[in-house]
Image 1 (spheres, rainbow, N blue to C red):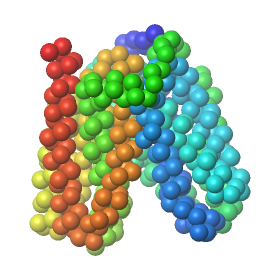
Image 2: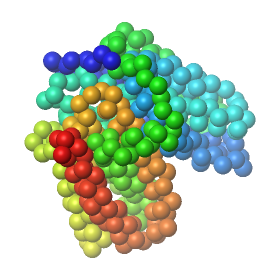
Image 3: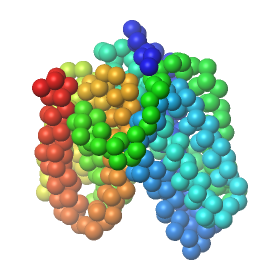
Image 4: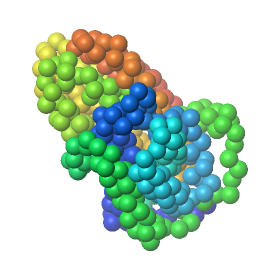
Length: 382
């Protein structure tokens, strides 16, 4: 293995990797924003599953992805992910039967998974120690910013021609970024000639090691809240403008977490973030004020950024960071996948949404706090 000794932070490369992350977020956003048109195209088909099709691979293979990235190296993993994602995005521009389209969406999850494991690991490796937490805070904004940009760029789509333009356009952007990545990515970073264990052994290694699992536990708890509340909270509060404001507040919290982590340990930031979020969600139910919901999303954004910042804090070696990012991908997808149906049970009641949010945040304080404490002891060799 060749580590990439970062004596200075390579900000141009980090900007390129973060920009690539925006295209990764677009793998979800391009379907979410065109879902009504897809439902018209594939009338009678379970089109909603096209959104979560990419997440299926993350749920099943997130832990394994860390070992795959460690085996093939960060450069090769990013380039393969970009090439595969570009081809699949372009293929989605063909007028296909629904089963073929869904097959492409699930296959697109392979590139998505490699991206979300390799890109943050590479960004951390290209930053000097004093800047790692800031860089991880920046990375944590990729999903929200990618969604927001797609919402601005993608026009209302009513016919197949518009759908084709969105899918092919996404593929062409990935094609355009590929040569830039080929030229800019460092060679020989995190390339180990290791055998990839069987899936059972992979999960045992990661989830019995709190250093590798802690950030994933925190991230999975956070993702169970974010998408679901965004879907149901604005209507429950009678303030649809929250659809625009809540993601921005969350992004600000995530970005701020990178700077806060310079002064407060990232694991502590996560636990305190969950605790403050619980108090704010309770206050939201009592007051009924949308402004309190905005503050709650700001606090949950700090949780998100703190989890990303904790990965390089707890794991010095790029290989371990890749494994920890694999756990984040897997548990994050599980949280996203399970959170929405869970919150749907109480979607009609502000008290129900707030109560479930408080319960999840308390879970985050107790369980995430315990795992992070164990991770800190493991890092110090206790």
